[in-house]
Length: 480
Image: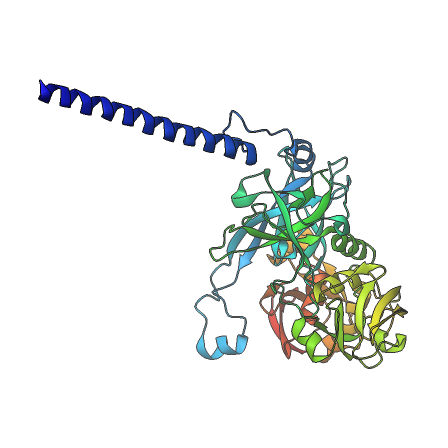
């Protein structure tokens, strides 16, 4: 009996203890839940409870943009296996000389900017192309003419013979804000009419991708997915306005890795206007040597505020020297637009032509000062030179594209005929009237712009290749 009573007593006490402990922890748990619920009002983010009321609606912008972006298809001769040096071929031979040229096909994107058929794309999309075909979003196809190119901004202007085309209105890249939504519209991997979305990640980016002496790189950076084939396509804002031309990606693989870059539309507008009016871009220069102002330079030069672009030198006879700018000045703004790095300053200056006057706000000795400056061209004057005039005057000849009959007769896909040759550089190296220029260096010649771009080369000399009407091939060396 004693053993039974002892067992019952122990069991009873154990049960009481268990209930007490359970109640203690339950109260503590409830108290913790109430405490966190009051201090941290969080909500589940599942599909059933997420609130999308504040998400941007980009459907209208996408619909407007899709019809204004085209597929650009090019055909060019693949000359990678052929030597362009006739002297090397004479001594060592060239097994590919008699082989028919291989055709290389490529594609990109373009943006219709007017209802009468003007289209903007990248220079690298149409460079060296023998033919350019445009495919609209509604699958209509056109053959495009290359009106002009500008390698320094990687832009090109095309024209198709069509009317009442859907086009995208220009926006204002100055008003673009970091963090705002943007759409990239193009044809990645030949997947036509593709739209991706992202935000503006940065502005004024220089990624050193344009191998040109006077290149302007002040890209808009975005995280909208851009891949091969998107080049030349549209970057638009949430209103469907064009704010940039997609041009490049930062990637170790060649495909999208999170960063893409677009030429700001305000540069595009300037380049297009120049190509239409003059046939070449009228570049303006301040005539200074610049350095980005950073903490190290500020400490070295005893500069208190890290803001603006530092002038470390002047070009003799340049616009800056004439306006009274001095070495050590800091350029703060151009025409009211702040500049805090070299790309931003180049972008602002790149919108003007030689002869234009602009107001510069500078800092000198800690005090601000405003100066008026008349921009000059790279020759140090304010003249505007038309494309055809500059080439004709420099080389001493005029150039005429081949007609379709001539192309068939000479079995050529492209070329420019030398006409009205006079005293000048071409006559001095032995070129005679009627000569058809097919290649300069390793690049095919399809337009006068190809000749001008070749003349801007930093090489010491160029090899001009072509054929005479009697079928005789000829090569000439032109010193730069």
